[in-house]
Length: 473
Ligand code: NAP
Image 1 (cartoon, helix red, strand yellow):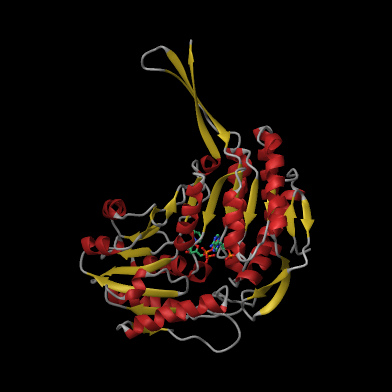
Image 2: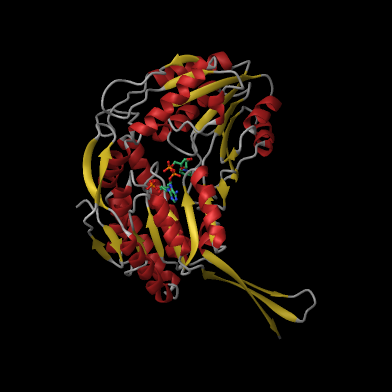
């Protein structure tokens, strides 16, 4: 059964006002989702605040078991969930299924972390007291997620929140709310107490989010989305100095050094560029390729991209689906058109296809290092290649951005690759790999790509306050 109502205090709540959710591959309406007004927003805050005192004291093992059960249900129902992701987001089934497995793994990882929150007991250097450090749930948290990974961005926040003993209000992106509602249904079936997770779908987002952030009972904001909206929310969070975790935009460089194995670099580039149709904060955006191998890399990547089959996400054999909306697709087309006007050369693709779906074809551009497209997050299947003369030039250009989420380096020599990795200003570096996202590793960025880390050992601490207790003994 497809959930399309709000979820507040353990109940599914319908509203008179509803908003259509579209399948971007043909612009048909999948369903209409309930729109939360001020009344429902307040109910969600009330429910989260009411559930907090009991839930924050629930045994970690109990919280862990709920997450573990939710993980198991997600895996058992992975195909159905993947079909839903594919329909509302446009990505192909294999990408959607991969996302569901990745998303479920956050529930498993945080089920394991819930029972492993360590404190400290130390002697003070002067010997006059003992230093005790403990952790407590931060409290009611607002979780805001984007449309590009509707399952994984939700579980990457809900998992640690539950593990830590927090209660939450989730606001998914309005293009893709159905996946979050389906995951919430799973959490309910896994035995989550009422009021712990509340899901609201208001539109427009701005006033609703401001209302929640202004409520003194809300103590924490965990946001994944664009840097532009993240900056706006940081300002609002500063009003009450609430805790924030910000997973923002990226503009990943993909560096290929002259000693790289070119076939492996192309295989990695295909993953880093085309996973999720390029609509990933981790997507390789700018390819900086050593002059010795630039021709061969460009030819082989163009050849591999030209074989990619584009089509509706659930159609047989499709490898590249639609963008989430016509608006998003047109942004990609505009970036490419402007790049070409500035002298960018099209090696493949570069034109919108006709038809009702939000499709954009695999595209390869070769450009000069000052082409404007290199400054933007493309969020589509467009590989932009720049030839570089040296490792130093590759590093300098890679760092020439306000973003710093992830980078990719291909080299035949590990010491050389690590030297480059250490010089790049980004929170994550993939060496000779096209994907490194892992629930067990810290995910997050430098510079304007964000604040804080999700997943790994850090993720649960986004939902915990640290408390020091000093005592004379
Ligand atoms: P977005 O436009 O910033 O939206 C993200 C979320 O914020 C949505 O739920 C949206 O709600 C909400 N929102 C929009 N305007 C708001 C406002 N004024 N006040 C409060 N909330 C507001 O981003 P997106 O287009 O969905 O996602 C793409 C971006 O997310 C890219 O920049 C990508 O790099 C980034 N991202 C980062 C990570 C990471 O981990 N670093 C992961 C995935 C994506 P509505 O949908 O209702 O407008």
